[in-house]
Amino acid sequence: MTTKEVAALIRKTPHAVRQMRHRGIGPQGIRVGRGTLYRRAAVMAWLEAREQADPLAQRALAA
Image 1 (spheres, helix red, strand yellow):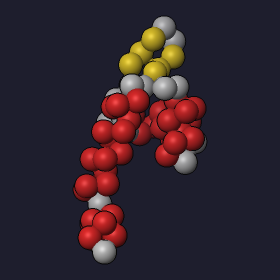
Image 2: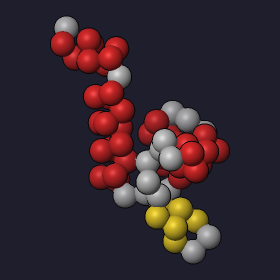
Image 3: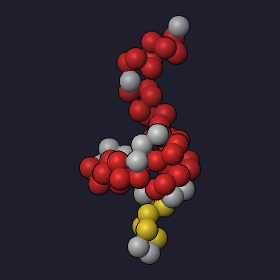
């Protein structure tokens, strides 16, 4: 996936996705030439991990 595709999936800007990756709080990217690509499985695992760490999401799932 491209940075733009990840941004659309998580409803953030591409700049926000890049910033999260640089800070180590976003999905892990793979440098390909000058760009960065993301494995779909890695992005989905990152989203799932964030969901499990979110207490509000846990309450919503339990209801």
